[in-house]
Length: 149
Image 1 (cartoon, one colour):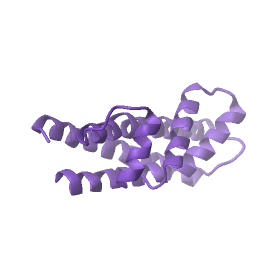
Image 2 (cartoon, one colour; image 1 turned 30 degrees about the horizontal axis):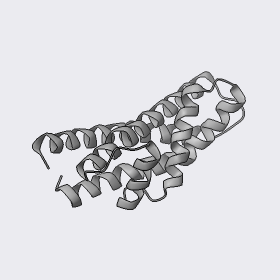
Image 3 (cartoon, one colour; image 1 turned 90 degrees about the vertical axis):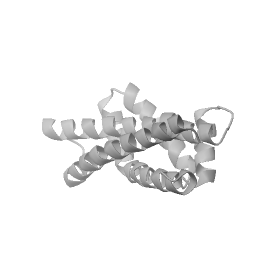
């Protein structure tokens, strides 16, 4: 592995850890609020932050880290689904289908505006956030084992 790729991997791992930290903060805050039919403006703001942070971390993982792992393994670039499947084979994620759902949810977050759909997004984000947070730890462990980072 070249020094440039090693530095890039270290930077992306730090970025993912920072993003995970703020996502965990929002997740804890929203867990205390709970899922409900109506939210106060402050609660809505908390859930909006949670969704934004969820989407950001999912992008860091799928678009940056998984792609970088493929590059380091000399894999041919492919689709997001290809990166997800290879991440599962490497043990970076436990179930590819969870990450497919995360990717779909990330797109829903970016494009949904109906209040009743937003509540469903909140429910799904709350359910899938632990998967994202665990993946950051698994990616770090994989990097340590495979690349001594």
